[in-house]
Amino acid sequence: MSGRRGRVLGVVSLVAAGGLLALALFGGRVVDRPALAQAGAVRASEAWIRLPAAPGRPAAGYVELVGAAGEALVAASTPMAARTELHSMVLEGGVMRMRAEPRLPFDGDGRLVLKPGGHHLMFFDLDPKLKPGQRVPVDLVFASGAKLRLSAEARAPTGEAHRD
Image (cartoon, rainbow, N blue to C red; front, side):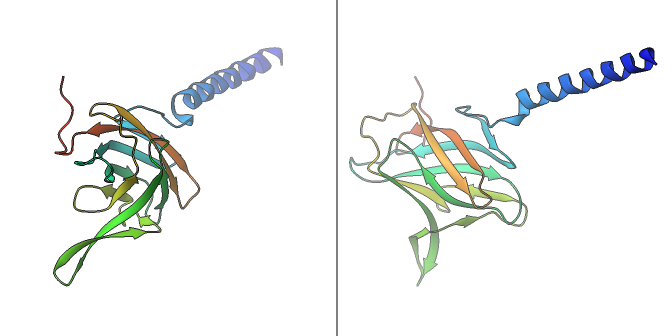
């Protein structure tokens, strides 16, 4: 009986160690990792902010999100701006117009792409000391209750990546 008990305890210890390793590697959200961030079932990549061309104008934020169909982005914020809004672009009377939205839904494939000319974040009263190449913490909140902090690269108004 003690041999069997020892084997069972060994297996339980191995499973527990594997679980702790998996939790350490994958259980928490990834913070300030430029290429990929994740919270629960939502993953983010390619986060960047186009700095305003003129001081005092809003900046735009972009990111690729992958989650579940039916998920939605419902809020965003950063300590670097006074206010952040979710925006869409809509065609009205032959003219593209920007519109603030209460939520941006993921598509049927579980994707939401915020990109120039489409859905995006608008950052109002962004810190004027922010320069191309710096990283900006951005907090996202989803309809499911998931929260995600990502690190977005500040880019020049042309949208080009900062180069030293």
